[in-house]
Amino acid sequence: MYRIDTVYIGGAFQPAHGREELLLLNPTTEAPMGVLVLADEEDTRRAVASAAGAFPSWSRSGRQERIDLLNALAEAVRRRVDDLTEATILEYGGPIEQARWRAGLAANNFLAAATLLEDYAFTRRINEVDVVAQAVGVAAHIVPWNSVYNAISVKMAGALAAGCPVVVKPSEYSAWQVRLFTECLHAAGAPAGVINVVNGRGVVAGQALAAHPEVRKISFTGSTPVGKSILRTAAERMARVTLELGGKSPTIVMDDADLAKAAALALSIGFANNGQACIAGTRILVPGARVDAFCEALRVAVRDVVPGDPRIARTILGPLVNHRQYDRVQAYIRKGLEEGARLVTGGPGRPEGFTRGYFVQPTIFADVTNDMTIAREEIFGPVLCVIAYDDDDHAVAIANDTPYGLHAYVIGQDMGRARAIADRIDAGRVAINGLTHEPLAPFGGFKQSGVGREYGVFGIEAHLELKAVIGATRS
Image (tube, rainbow, N blue to C red; front, side):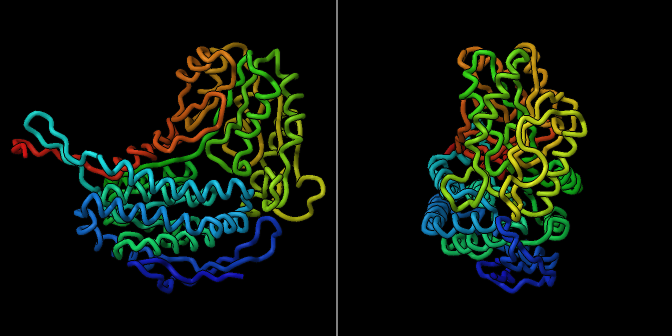
């Protein structure tokens, strides 16, 4: 059993002022594994004061100083990849290969920002005007439990490159992962106050951050309802906001797709990260004439989606993060049955042979219409819907008939048609014939999937304000 009773403020681990304790359970075994002493409003205020005190010097720091820090952060994370991987397996139930990849991804986020910073133009000349990009101010980064290293690092990399000190408010359900990652941040040797971490409940620490008058930038990844609340709070003082929110992503299987390959790919897209991924392709759109054949291909492909102990290499699907999430997903499965959807595979309860742990059967529904609850709402678990369409126009119409627009997928052999379909989908990213990540490309959503973009130069610019100095003399 671990006990975490500190916050990271001013370059040091300090005792938390908060007194509320949260018992954390291993999602694979349901056994107690640790206690987190939750940060409170006072911890949050101290963290913001620390960042505000660091802002004048860090915002004026030189390009090389920022590059050196970003490279040091990447190296510190790389040195602890094994520890970070183990923490993700223990606390989150992430299958071992996915867990290791995510730890490596965090190091790469810092390296990418360092490389971009080498020739980033903070001043640009337009006629007789210097357009100057300057740091927006203290940045609050509120991150979820489903990909904590990546979420912290990609936001922080952009902020530090821009010259903004940060206060991170991670999910309380990723306490051990955050503790180890914060040790990496500390080892990199950032100036005191440039990096601060307080781990408390969203309604306490998160709300205090969003409302703090010295926080000039908020970057939040999480649910759409919470994102809307943060946006309303930030609007009171016009704080700059980036929101990466929920999704109900479509996977369009074209009529020329190889069904066996398409089924396997659709499952990897839909069940990624134990089904707890905002980018998961949870609505699989299939030509009506091929639905039965595709469902049979899914039944075959799902045999390879092995649930189990995340430490075992063959495991594809680990447990959900906690009992609350397990109950939520079970409720959606029951709702799908109540609304008349047909089970292709899976269903309520744990997989056969499992008596403990927050494991959910990989579940696929057919005969789903796009107005059903399971097709409208983000479930955040291994539950997929097969929806029939008539032609390409109909597929695009169904794909766009959602309040979300984070990600989409197209699977087919005619690349010209696939690209034409992708161009018509309202989503921040559209992947054709794969599930690949490009860390320099923008990431974010249309509609209620968010505001703004992260990654690459876009993540840096999200932490900058532009100032025009008119009549400036060319140097």
